[in-house]
Image (cartoon, rainbow, N blue to C red):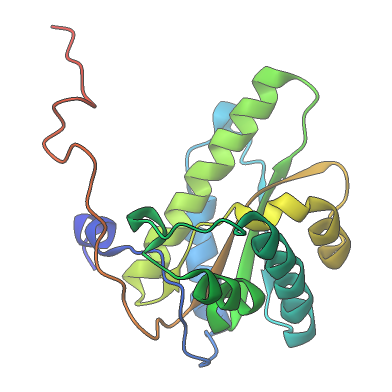
Length: 196
């Protein structure tokens, strides 16, 4: 798939088929992530690939508890793909039925400047990961919601204190491809300021 096609085709997938993803494809995707630019070329990201059903179940239970709490006054919006509260809770408890979940980590830093650089670098790697998955016909969904229960996620995945959790994505073959969400300012009249 051509790069711009992958960018335009990428969606936040919330329903997956149960078919396993080949380990070789996961490594290809993570290799693309590993080639992202990074501050000072530190390449300070790491990825945890979870395919163990018991671990996925524990992660889902943690995320479901969070979603149940922060969706008490649920208002479906286009930004959430118009999911009902119940659909969102079902997505959370199984990560949409994805056969794999990838967690992006970076070095924890006490210095605010270095922390920001680490997060930006890991985010660039995460974007490469999402686009590479799209190019291989796989679905993803960039998530930070599961990090609301960081303590449980750290315990479940044995993440040491010297690592910062950046984002989570399910990975699998989409059961359905959601429609493209409208872009805010698609003509780039408000988001771009030229200094000529």
